[in-house]
Length: 121
Image (cartoon, rainbow, N blue to C red; front, side, top):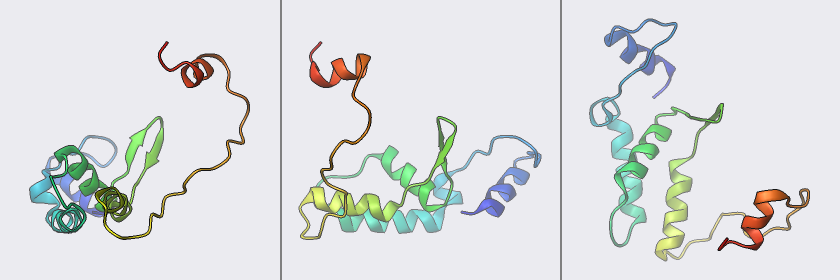
């Protein structure tokens, strides 16, 4: 879903172009994305099911709608998420995650240091 589709939904709900919230019916408004994400999940999961919340987030990401958190827009790749699920489910594919790396930032201080070194406290 691109910006034009979101604006069309907003106009249909009586919103102005300057500001407002758009309520999206995922099953109705994002049908192509639903089929795509459901296919990805079906090919990734060997046992069990995906949580509905994760599926809905993946639908929003597939529609190219970013998630706003701490003032930044985040957009994740549903195929990348499913690739990680495949690794965890035991599919014989290569893990594309970064893996272990050397911590190169400043020394840990304060509560972060105590949480890291004394997790039970």
